[in-house]
Image (cartoon, rainbow, N blue to C red; front, side, top):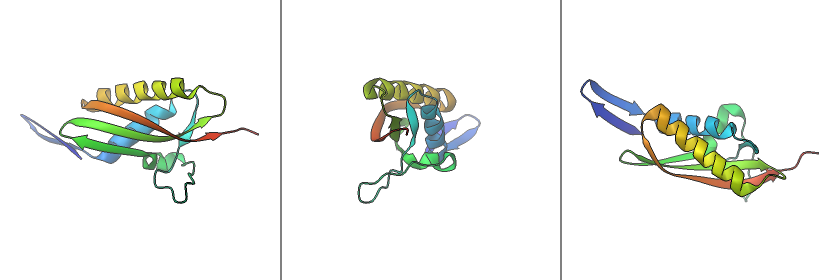
Length: 117
């Protein structure tokens, strides 16, 4: 939870809000299929539905600085490094613009590749 104080009072932004912004921003990137469950058992990851997308995002805050971890599933055939870099840029831009907070790091953890049949 992030707390910001100004002359008029306090602003409190829950980590779930930041997770949702990050997840929606990531989904706008080319090559991403969806978010993966970050609490996988037995090494199996499931593709999360839109309503639960923020469960594939982990937000850590240190003062006003954020570190965001995104667990993603990408399309087969895309260049992983390029797609991950695009996701990082998009998420950092969106979170900073919408919240006014500083994003230190965006980590993209590719949990799987989806092959279309």
